[in-house]
Length: 89
Image 1: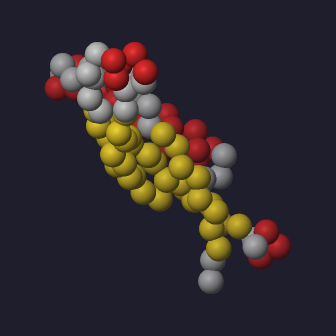
Image 2: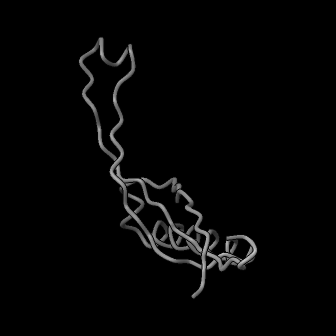
């Protein structure tokens, strides 16, 4: 049986909603994902899965003074794995 270690990487994208519907924005998104996956692969990590996590952002002191409510964003995390030897278990 193989043993694996896992690493998660936040997929931070700097793209506007308007850009996300244009071919140039889609290419930017694809290039970012390709770069992350290829970089991790170069370091021995295999792409395993993608997870979308809801992230609730609560206002700080100033925001709460101005009745700023919480906002929720999705955090995209790519999960990578690599096989580890028995001596590391």
